[in-house]
Image (cartoon, rainbow, N blue to C red; front, side):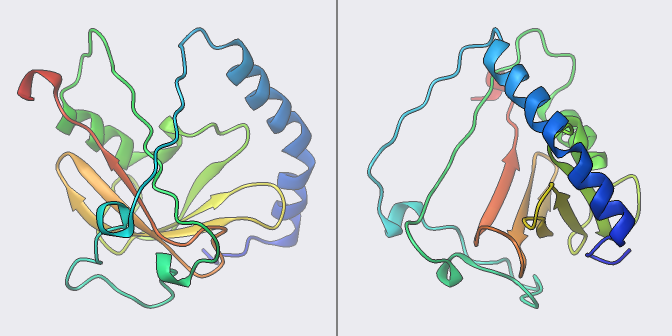
Length: 171
């Protein structure tokens, strides 16, 4: 599948944008889960993304040093009470379909390179969003309890995104 969808698909995505923004905003405004945000001073030594793993393709990679402006190290966390899956089972389920954890009314992961139904190093996705800011990414690391994506040329941000799970009882 090409990274740039056909014109009809782009128009369809753009047409759904107002409803997607409204539904996502409604969801965030009325959620009952408390959200906490804080900003902490950081440093390049402590907060820079790790180097790409040996063997990871650097072709089209848009690494953090290619970015402009401040370096952000964002961390989103959640705790799951009464979980039915352990960390490895959870990550396997997420890796099989990234849209399970995405606000699909607003953004949708589309696999553009790799086998369907799973995830492997080298697979590529595009986060489809209305407007000119689709976000191409590549899987650069995969473990039983995590995966890491590198942003590719054309992504709004430069750097890496890591999804990781751990069992609270193992800490």
